[in-house]
Amino acid sequence: MLLGWHVMCHLVALLKMLSVQRVNKHDQLL
Image (cartoon, rainbow, N blue to C red; front, top):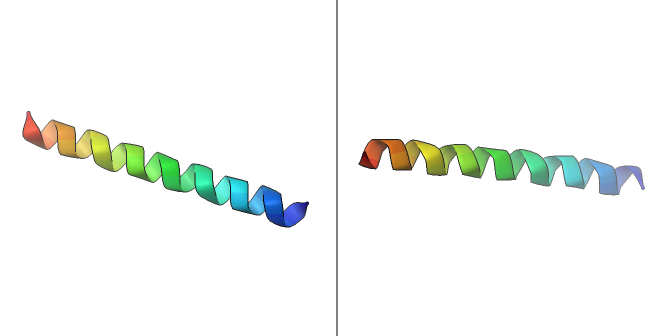
């Protein structure tokens, strides 16, 4: 149970990082 929670938090962090990178790339294109 605890491991699942840790994995979920890690996935959320990865998604946030990817979304930020995507926004940065979009800003660079503009």
